[in-house]
Each structure stands twice: as C-alpha cells, then as structure tokens.
Image (cartoon, rainbow, N blue to C red; front, side, top):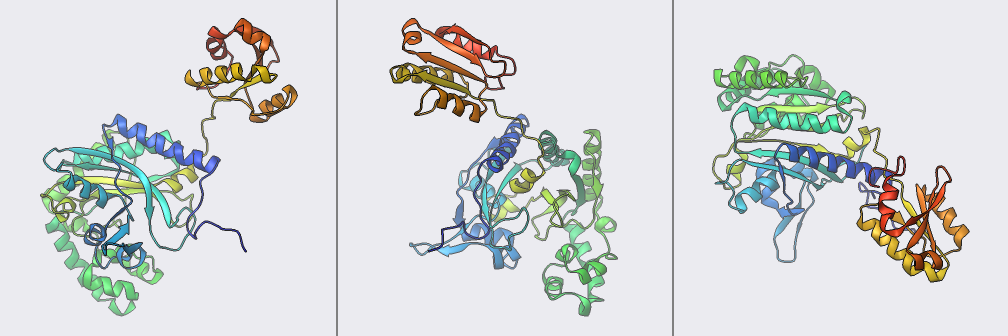
Length: 420
C-alpha cells in the first residue's frame, strides 16, 4: 500500500518554511498593532450565504472554487475562501456596527478548489486588515501605509510595486459601465466566452481578463478617469496626495478592477515580478456596501488581504534563532539537578536543551550538533555545592559558576543570541 500523502494542493509547513510563515504573521501582527488594529479570529467555515451573497452568485469563486458541503443537520456550509466577508459577518453578528470604527487584523487558512501553482494552494493562508467605519480617503491611505510598512519590515518592499486605481462612486461607475458596454459590444464576436457573459452581467470584469485576445481588445478600452464625478475625483486626489506625503511610491493602473457593486473608490495591489505570472502579493480597496449586504447598516470600509505563502517566498533573510544552551548532567545521579537547571533557564527566557540519554561524550556531541552556544555541566558534586561548570563552546573556555548567577553569566556571553 502506498504511503499517505497530503491532499493535492495542500502541504505541510516544517522547518524553514514554517519559520518563514510564522515570521510573516508575527511581523504583520506587530506592525498592525502599531497602527491600532486588533486581531480577530473567525471560524474557518460559515454559512454558505456569507460568501455566495457577497462574492456574487456568478463569480468564479462561488461557481467553481468554494469547498461547500451539507452538514449532518442539513445546513449548507463553506470553508472560507477569503476573510473580508467573515469579518463583516462577525461585525454584524456581534452588534459592533454601533461601535465604530473597528480596526481588524486577521491571519489564518483559506480554502479554494483551484489549480495548484507556484505560491498558490487549495489550502492557503492570508493576513488581512479591515478598517470599518471611516468614509474618508485618509482611512484608505492608512491601510495602504500599514501594508507598506509590513512589506518594508519583511525586507521585501523593494521587490514590489504599489499599483493604484479608483473605481469611483456609483454615479461614476454607472457612466463608466455604459461606456464599456458600448466599446466592448463592437468586439463582441471576438471576445472570449467568459467575457461575452461578463458583457451582459459585469463588463468591468472584462478589464481583468487573462485571455490574450481579450487583453488586446482591453488595451484600447476607455478608462474611468473621464467618467469620475467631482466627488470621486476629489477622493482620488486626496488619497494620492496622502500617499505622496507619506513617501509611499505608487504607479497608477487603470485596469485594476473589482467586479461587485459594493466596491467603490480605491482599488490597489502590491505586485512583484519575482513570482512568475501570478504577481499580486497584497491587494485591497474600499467596499462601502458590504456590511449592508450582511444585514447591517450602510457602513464604509476599506481593507486588504495578502497571501502568506507568497510573502514568505519573497523573504530572503530570517533573523537567526538564538543558539541554545546545552545542559549536560555528569552521571545519572545529577540528572534531577540538571533538569532543575534546564527549567530555570527556560523560565528566564533562555532557549535550553538536554539530551534524554547518553554519556558525557555523546551528550556533548549532541550539543555540538544542535549548534549550542554554551554547555552547562554538573555532576553530583557540583549539584551538592550549588554550582555548575559553564563551558563556552565558541572559545572553549570553562569556568565554575554559582547556580544563582547562571542566568546572568549566560546572558553575558558574547553573541549569546537575542533570547539569551
């Protein structure tokens, strides 16, 4: 019988991959906290309506990619394909629409049944921000600035470009939609089958088509710039001015779109050329109509989501973990005292290890294999006197140290590590 393997499109996170994954989350959690965002955790599955209602009944995610099943109670539930809808559902469910603004950070697994490819899996992981309540363009600038700082702190800001667009307000979009229908109708016979369907339902989605024939037609399509109302134009000007004032570089890309009507004004993506064709690592925008679709009141909101796998692939340097301290008992009679020393070091925040068996030589070999910074050696005689032998495994120096000052002695070792 063949050995069991992970389900296609999933993978185990072990060793360096897990450390990179954790580094992305820890960095994002820290930076978002500096901006006042509070972490929320929502269930990994929701009533199917949470996503079908908000992602669009005819969207590819809903029709082709969601993991949806009927549970034993006969209810239709779906593994979450994204985080924003779940956060907005939680806002309404917990009665928080009267306690605005809410600044939310989240991190966790998402699920989509799609073709696995580089940096994209069927179980994947995202970090995200949602700023719910403010209608001002300064809120959009703040969530973009937070994303930019996360990328900077991960050391990958130089590998990405911020692309920015406006979707305008409802009046702008109505006028723009009419202009797109007029333009694409002239090429109706040349469009792909998907784009022909979108021409009837949602012509803005044609702008995002990956079909090469469609892309040639899209190249000359009108942009929204000539259809913005004065209010929408002013919003976009304010956002661009704020980003410039913050020193955040961006380029304008009029082809960034969001297909559903509750999206408005800002749309943006941080993109890279270092991961192949699928280059977006963080994307978001304003979605002032989503909370209302969840049964709440009309509530402005803006946010973004980023794929942890893709961010982790761009991280080139991880901070080295502190080298451990090896605790080595000299003889079985000293193991109890050695274990007490081991626990004391850990409680002091020092990474420490002790082999479960072996003589002194084998335990020292194990310490070297671990890359230990120093060894704490004690036998029955040292235990009785309340001392240990502290051996510097870099210089080879060894000296006797009283147990009650051992922590300080280890911390005084040169380059003992950040946690030591």
